[in-house]
Image 1 (tube, helix red, strand yellow):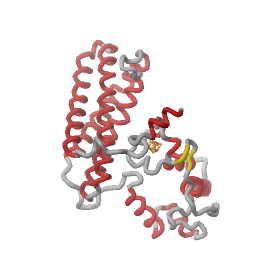
Image 2 (cartoon, helix red, strand yellow):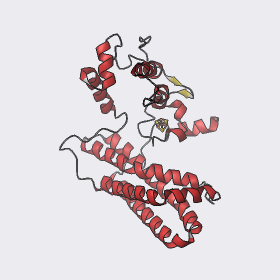
Image 3 (cartoon, helix red, strand yellow):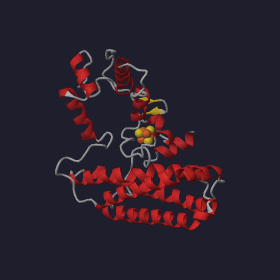
Image 4 (cartoon, protein in one colour):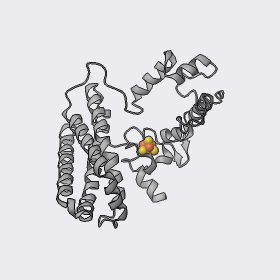
Length: 280
Ligand code: SF4
């Protein structure tokens, strides 16, 4: 374990000043994120490394955890972490005890990762989340059945007239198709808790997911039926069904969360991204 050396959270990442809140309403596709160099969460995760690496001991993982906190957040940034207290460190590491409870409750209040579960008895009737979940289940089934063939066809296909490589379109479908449900779930949960900002921000990410997945299918609609003449009609019908359901979800999100479309996500919608692109 390394003792804390500073109580101030660092303000700069490798690409410039960290953008506060940039990871609150992003798509979590860090490998492709144009603002990754300015994201504190990404920096933390990179510092943390692979916690599942069997070559590491628990002591290695603890050391990396504290180093990452110190490097990226400042160890005492929340005023609750005191490495000199070994019991606190172990509780935190194990996710148990009052220290861990305090940290993780604070994280949930901040909606660090948006992954918190429903509180018992709180779940509202939420047809949008359920529809998105069903869509994701059907997508996963489709990918299990046709994903490998689709990948081979997309890898071999020329860039689509829209400028998108078919293999990228398939990646987009895989990523956003399963992200839609959790984001709508979070928007509904924020709604139930009266958090207007989180409701709109989460719904905006869902809106983006629906639109990007729809666009991905548009590319595959031109690739797969042509690559597999024997399944031409089946592929066309399946893709049309996915697109119909995505379009329906998109319209429902606009209706249900009218503040979503104009929500300004830190970094992505406030002009920072354009500046970043212009400077690169
Ligand atoms: S903003 Fe989101 S997608 Fe981008 S690096 Fe941070 S966590 Fe990843």
